[in-house]
Length: 112
Length: 177
Image (cartoon, rainbow over all chains, first blue to last red; front, side, top):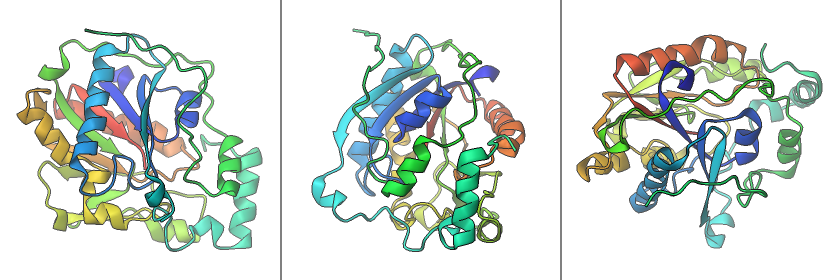
């Protein structure tokens, strides 16, 4: 997108990966999968993160910067562990799937 | 007052906090697409953010109920395959019209309030408060489980970029699953 003239900013909860692959501008937050903008109904948090992303567009002057935000997931919500899917994902559902995944992680080509 | 951010030397955000340990260990050694020899693409904004037309792009697997779901049946058959296509979500879509097809996170929160994955209400507030210049008529979604990224990178991503340009978008806010 950026190469085609669009300005982008990414909200990530895995800055480890974002840094590896390289994003033009990113904002990182320690929130779970499925609720990366905050809990359902928490419009104030959704707006807070969006404002930080807009600010990042104004302030980041060179590619590859990741701004880490200080917000944390409340401990009582963390204990709910309610971001995990109720059913195991397909690759985890059989020994064959797990073996294929291990093979991919060790020797796979992500550009296939 | 504008300030320029500096790189954070050691990351404060724990990327693996919400993962089971086995998955976290595999993500640490995952075969990521090697971009080490490439420069990160960069477009400088040609106008202030408050004049930009904005679109959201989410990898959360959301789609309109009248649209085709992301293909989870094939993933169940072929577990290293993820549907590489994308969908469009119209501005102002109602909660009742949103569906989610993504097997790698709990979908119930996004179904309760899609704004926790695609914050269209926050975006409308940004416009009402004069912080952005406009909102795209459509926002784009895809399903982020893509171990083999070839089709997504070669075909889907360029098509999404073209579509956003057709929609006359200036600024794209991307968010992950």
